[in-house]
Length: 339
Ligand code: NDP
Image 1 (tube, rainbow, N blue to C red):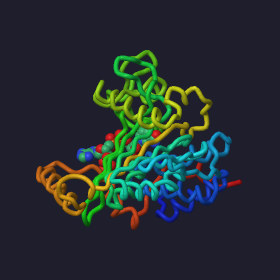
Image 2 (image 1 turned 90 degrees about the horizontal axis):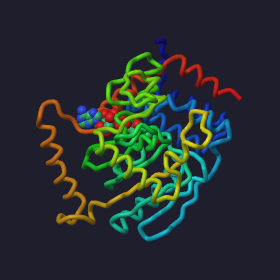
Image 3 (image 1 turned 135 degrees about the vertical axis):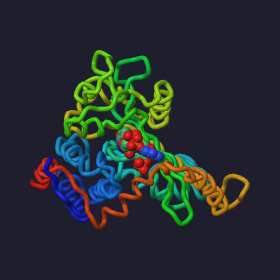
Image 4 (image 1 turned 90 degrees about the vertical axis):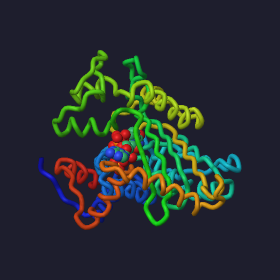
């Protein structure tokens, strides 16, 4: 497969050009370009420039409004709600996050429901800035239904990731970010694009048979990770991100027309906690220092690493070496950079 090498600056510039030429405002495009550039920087291919065609085509089709300005609603001392007004989630997130952080510091804990917005990013990005800022953070987001409940064969849940960030003194935060499906949908699409089989346990075909064929898996249903335990987490994410925000469940948004490859509309919930307000230590520095004992204990064993270490390793390399994308994807993106 022929590839193109780009610097991170070129990734950002190309993203900005394609997004703005596709009708997304400069302000919103800057936030979305940062999401994709940071994903490329951290070696998360399925949420880097791979997502450009979906962002651009869903804005060009008029299904998602790339020009909207999100609005903030101070619903309760511990709740800041963001209405994304049927735009992309990233600008809604950027608008609400500083208020969420401020509320978490003054209240000890605060939540930010995001409604009427279309999420297309890796979820770790959403907790990263909060955890870098010394807050413990959770994020839950739903997506269009692709995943069957255990025992069923119907696409019912989104791939519904959750992310958790824990600040670390003098180090980047520990963050895990995982879909409640056995794999992210983008991973199956990448296997299809590259002509590879998918591992067993990722998907069933439309008749409910286990499959390693990515095309049959995309046509059928994805499976939750860990059987009924993953299905319960997918259900919880759906309830937190949608039930609490009054948006659409994955199976409801699946009924909407969405043939442009972009994200469907749904909800997201963020929760931020100030470690200084919890536990016996009384100050966040002591609580976070104590947590390092656990990380050290984990890492003492050969073969272990912390979630997010892979990303941080990539982050050390990509600013100098750049990143690569398939030439076919690059050519498609250049098409979106035209009028
Ligand atoms: P992975 O299974 O690749 O990784 C899940 C987590 O496990 C990551 O935090 C990863 O850290 C960590 N991890 C992996 N291997 C190890 C290991 N050996 N030791 C310790 N930790 C490890 O992610 P998924 O396939 O579940 O999801 C991929 C992405 O897709 C996510 O970013 C998710 O947010 C996104 N997604 C987005 C959706 C949307 O609607 N916006 C829908 C569904 C998924 P590390 O990164 O360091 O490897």
